[in-house]
Image (cartoon, rainbow, N blue to C red; front, side):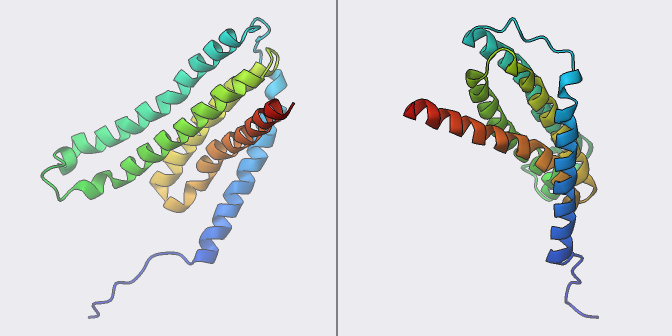
Length: 185
């Protein structure tokens, strides 16, 4: 018998190809989602003041924050049903590694998402505020797909990650442009 461990890791090229396919699928999904945006019956015409728009955004962000709660429940579920219930005892922390990673990434993504959406709401008029619920729905769906994908195989988390990160990155880009424009003009 050999003492060498046989690696079950996939080659980099195979992983990157799968990741690129998942990113492309996300781009298609986002395009379809935003194309259907006009058919969603959301009336934001009453949000005329910045305070109204921030209040509306904070209320929607509350829904985004539920993803952190569900990720916490994932950790609690594993801890409550395994030997990992006592983290100080040791020996079973590997059982909560995956749920902890999902929780950590969800928390990180939420902080970025919340700051971008709050900033975005300060640059939008009442008609554009329809985008806030769309960004929140995409965030929630992205976190769901991320958790499901990561739970089945680490290489399958890219679709959910990119569904969360791409809109946030786009929002950051737009907000950066607005901030710089407001400083220059």
